[in-house]
Image (cartoon, rainbow, N blue to C red):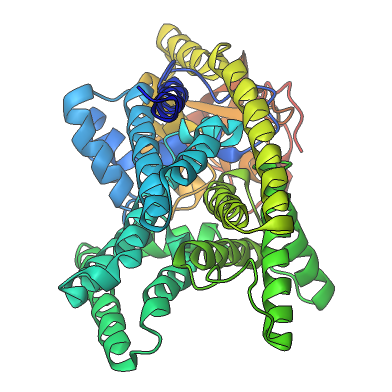
Length: 529
């Protein structure tokens, strides 16, 4: 075996070991005391798979009036539903599914680079992905991002290879169907559409009639496939649940220029969640490539190190994808760390692509490329050590809390074995306890409580006065237990309450603000705020 072949073999083995580490300790929690306080670790795994979970556990995927996101984002719960026939309902199963898509994302990322460059460039990109502690943490959650990235990368692989396919319109139509899959996985996929369109447009810019046919094929396939799904949603009277997902994700928008700028800065600066070195480096490399390109065009200099870079759909498509997703977070005015999984992938692509471009230049540009490569290797090494620390120190505080809460309910019966909690679907996934969501649902909480008559309520650290007001319409509350769960100071203990119906089946008036405080008959020790 030649030294070069041996080096590649060892490199691939190292990548495989880091990738395999993602699938170890599947039952473990999102690491405590990480830099990322994200809501998804105590809600999203249950929320977005609740249709599949309910279908297998309770034989009815739909709970009228509760949070039912499946009509708007059906792809992920459908895959979970299929999986549960084999594995049963467990957090390990859904996390294994997410990690399987992460593995697919590694392969698709490598294939993107192999279409445009040598093997080492693709391996370097995959190395950054598998050593990232940020991606390690979020790829192990059964959330929507791993599947969204898999569909996006699959569509990009087809789009980049489009010029050499014989039946280009058919492949374009397939890209359109994949985009519908992206949109029905996570609605924010619409902000990745410009990147896909750009990758299709770029090689056919000088062949306008051909380009038009390709765009019509892709757009038509996307419109038809999405319309068929919407026809099903409307036919089964689920449109209210479809619209509700957008309602609950509508955050207050800024009203002036300064507010819009601060929203952009919050979203832009949030990239540091992913990596303190590689994300700023990606930004600097984009600016350097843009500045050099503008100067070269203005003075007609030749040659230059950006030659062919902006016409490479991998590089420019990644830039457009990053811009699109930061644009979404700016518009949303509510970035969360998990959103930056998409940004992280494409920023790593940009760093690797520009580094490779510089290394194949001469003199100063090559020296810059070697310096950047050194920074990348050191960063990957540090990130790899950080990731291994998470791998070898798994924690189980949240799954233990959910199981202990369920055990307490089973040992202390109180009316229906039904819990109301914002983390209810997550608890159902872990311990199979039937639950409702107190914070979301197409039915207001007092009506939901009257219809389903739960026996229990759980809250994190404090009681929201508005929620307490809604509960007080039909119940008094007795705080009975607390279960340590996370490191988040606002979510570190899950408190359990017995719900006691008001005497003689009475109810209080909805909308009465005097119900926002502890009342006679309540036993509440945590703050109401």
